Amino acid sequence: MEQAISVRSKEAIPELLRKAKEARELIIDMAATPTGCHIGGSLSVIDLLIGAFAKRGHDPESLVLLSKGHAAAALYAALYVNGTITDNPAAGYGRAGSLFTGHPNHKLPGIPFATGSLGHGISYGAGWAIAQKLKGTDGISIVIGGDGELQEGLCWETAQIVQAQSLANFIYVVDCNGGQNDGYVQDISPIRNLKERFEAFGFTVREIDGHDFEDIWTALEPDPIRPVAVLAQTVKGKGVPAIEGNPEAHYVKIPEKLARRWKVSLP
Image (cartoon, rainbow, N blue to C red; front, side, top):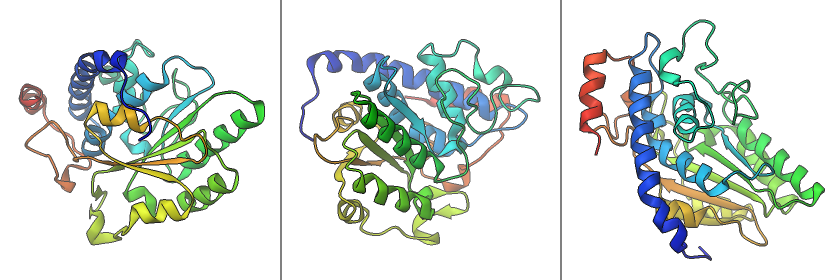
């Protein structure tokens, strides 16, 4: 990591922590709707989303894209606490006619592409990075995916294109929470030597604590020459002790009484 976290960004960390807690409360509220939500991965990725939006700022030429689209609850929560969307997503999440659909809805502000079919987000983000390179802008493409998602061949096909095009404006963040729909990644399709794999594709690889905002802020600096892969170690269900690290909390629908209890348990 070439640049240390700045004084200004250090001063922003208490605000990022406040936003992250508020966003976690919203995610829990969405799990208490009639449809429920993908709570485990949403709670693991929310700090990465909050940090990425803060790092990007209001640069219209830069992109933050959630590739693991089943964690839409986290994306909606992050956009809400940042003021990008003004309607509380928990009020309509998953309901008929609502824009707050189970996968990211591009009709909402701050969501340029609909994602959900795993592996597509990284290719959208690479296309954005190529476009900014051709236009000669300073735009950065930050794509946030998951470790289970890396079982999709499209991810690695895109990594090949990213290195072939020398996209130094491309940052791929992997939410390494160790879980996927049917259990633990290591029990279903283990992804060994992940750091070495990305290095073989020509990426600069940074391994971080995906819940530490200093780590996140520093890791989201582009490399002047090569694309960046950020391997963020996270905890599925982070913040709710009752479900932390449990792959069975991939998708849940909970009663409001339990939601209130879980929100109280947040640190």
